[in-house]
Image (cartoon, rainbow, N blue to C red; front, side, top):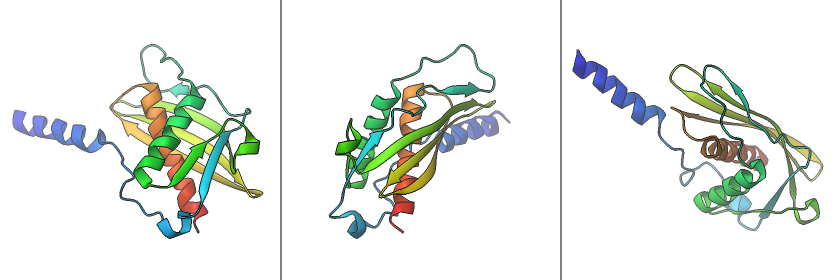
Length: 159
């Protein structure tokens, strides 16, 4: 019986605690080959994490704009796309507004959910990012959720 319990715990830790990596992805490299995509965060973006579910204490809020820049840089490295960030909309091709950031604590997992609106060439694309984990830091979970939202946007944008 103990072996079964330990086996289930180990399986849960490996299955739910794994990190998503975008080196193997469904993005069409030929579509993005000649494009430089420069993202800038709207000043109207949400800057705080809404925490829900059973938890103890309140996590400190990371610098959302800095975490977004890190997410873009990591995603660019993993996908080999020319993705950048800029501080001013005049330098950017894509204006990003963070609509919502929720960190939900369940009984055994946490789920960081981000909703972003991407505006480029007069079109709006709404994308949601998810990152599930056993816990982790607010900044790290937020970065991974942002990466997921940006990746989902790129999948939609290439169509």
